[in-house]
Amino acid sequence: MAWHNTSQIGSKQYTCGWCDNLVASPVGFHCQGKPDERIYICPHCDRPSIFSGYSQEPGVAYGSGVGHLPADVASLYQEARNCTSASCHTAAVLICRKLLMNIAVSQGAKPGQSFISYVEHLADNGYVPPNGKGWVDHIRKKGNEATHEIVLMTQDDAKELISFAEMLLKFIYEFPNRVPASGGP
Image 1: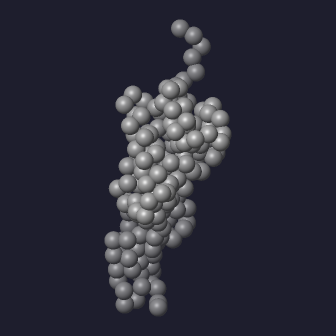
Image 2: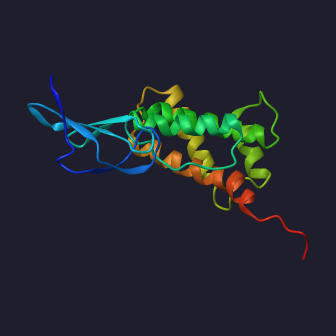
């Protein structure tokens, strides 16, 4: 298989699956005999992305980054997002469930408790926004379904749980840290 430089074709705009930046790459290659297969080099991280028709590898992780997270919480959230880029939707749902446990412990819940005690800790201590307890319970139910039943989670399941997890993480960690320090009234 021979690859040829595509600089004469023009740049391609895409979200890099490696660095999560929206880029336009002027450097790319196409496969001789397979014009819909191309490789573009990200101008931000210098890593290759492979395009074949409408598919992209590595895929783009669903959701957005969240600032001010503890290391273990950040790692789990990114892992759930990365699962969606590889179409591992059941894994993403399971990680979102585990993420709730880690959030609760980072906010003062005791390790080794039942999952429901973590959900109650978050709700009872004001970490779940108004009308959000149903979503926390939805993550619990979907996580239980993925764990204890012979069922695969869908892309929609993973996306909705990651969306809620992102909002919860911003509510608990990011937004409070955005408030400027006040020296008084």
